[in-house]
Image (cartoon, rainbow, N blue to C red; front, side):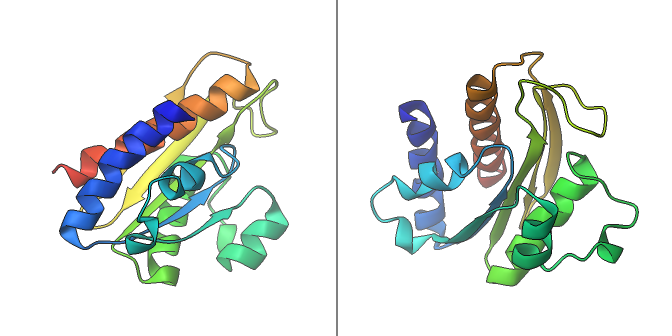
Length: 160
């Protein structure tokens, strides 16, 4: 967690300097991204909210994305990660939206993605979507790697 907070401190400094805000939707990181951002003193200046969108019910209730709205999408994919980031940005009226969706392990998901697969997206003044494949079935290590990669993705976009 300390490594994640180190990255979050850099993110926080940039958001505060720009007077910008963020909202986060995450799945297989289980709240680590939000926890890292909130561990930085002064988080209320930039962090508007977050959601752990781990199930279909959570997607419906927290994100207001119906089963019909998922036509053409599947979880753990770049288009879905992009949708989540954009949805969080819009729902919170934040400058930035950040999302993560994947399969932490120890097994893969029902879509055929192996453990260690995660898609992440940033939506804001710049946008980017990436996929990470760790090749590991270690759930805890994958959760950490996913959160770290998502925070670095956000930081990279804040530096543009």
